[in-house]
Length: 434
Image (tube, rainbow, N blue to C red; front, side):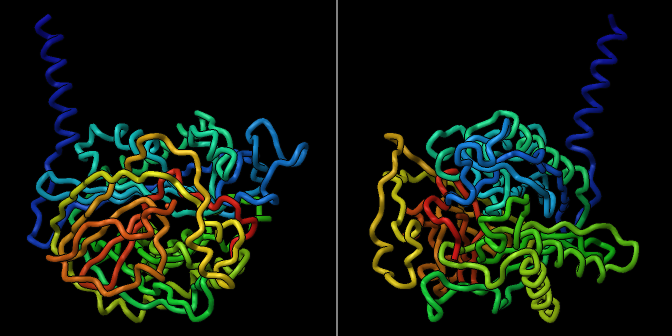
C-alpha cells in the first residue's frame, strides 16, 4: 500500500512538473513564446460555409450527399484547413491566440476550445479564438437551424469535434514549444490588394500590423498578422477547401521569414487575424489571385522590417458583456448594391433572435499595443480614424458592432483590428461577393 501511495505521489509530482515546468530565466525584454498548428481538413463531400447563394446550394439532387444537407459538398482541397495557435507566457501569466480557417466562430465553439486546454493554466478570457472568415472553409459545426440554412449547413457533431480537437492540438503544440523570445511590432501600408464595396473613392483600411517573435539566437519564429481583407478570392463556384487569401499571406510571409533565418532553419508559424473587412473586397480572383495577393503582401513587408521595434512583454485582458439585441441583416448584403445606392445600408431585415443575446467585448493590451474585440464585420468606412493614445483609448463598441461578424483593436497607431467572428456573422443573401 505504501509503495502504491508513493508511486501515485511521484506521478502527481511528474505531472505537476510537466505543466508548471521549470523554464529558463528570462531577460527583461523576453517572454516564453510557442506556436502550434493542426490540420482540420474534413473529408471531401463535407459542406463549405460562407457563400449562401444558389451556386453553393444543394438544389434537389445537386451536390447533396451523406455529409452535406443544404449546401454542396467540397470536391477538392486547394490548401489544407488548419487551426493555428500562438502562446505567450511570462511569470506564469499566459495569453493565447487561436485562429481557425472558418467563416466564423460561435460562443459554443470558443467555450469548448477554452475548456479543452484549461489544464494548461490559460485563463478562459486569455485565450482569444478567431476565424479568418474564409468562404471556402468547412461548415456544419454550429447547432443552429437558422445558420444551417443561411450559410453553414446542418450541424454535425463530428465536424464540431474535429475543429475543437484541432484547436486543442494547436494550443498544446504551442505550449510544448515555448522558448525565450523577444516580441517586435511594426505597422505599414499595404496598398493595391483591396477594393471598397462602397466604390472606388471610398476609403479602405490599408494598414497592416505585425507582432513577431524572435528567438534568443536571432531567428524569426512567427507571430500575428493583422490586415483587413475579405477572404473571397475564390468564387462561389469554387468547391475546394481553402483558407483563401489569409492562408496565402501567411504562407508567403513564413517563406520569407524562414529564408531570412537561413538554410535548414525551423518552420515559421504566423496567424492571420482579420481586420475591418466589412466593406473590403480583394483586388484579385481565383487561384492565381491568391498567389499574387500573398506575394504582394510579403513584398510590402520586407522593406519595412527595419522599422520593427521591441514590445514590452507584459499584457492584460479586460472583458465585458454587451446585449446585442435584435439581429438585422443589411439589405445591401442581399442586393450587392452598396456602390450604386449607399443609402440602402441603413435598411435592415430583422432575423430571429433569442430574448437575450449577449456578446463579449475584450480589450487586450500587449506592451503598448491595444486590441479591442467585438462581434461584427467592422467597416473601414467607419473605423479608419485616428486613435487616441493608449491611456485614453476607451473599450467601446463601434456602430458597426451592431451588425452581424469582428475583433478590432487600437493603439498609438491608427485603428487596428483582430477578428473574433461569432456565429451570427455570415454572408447571407449575396450570391457572389463583389
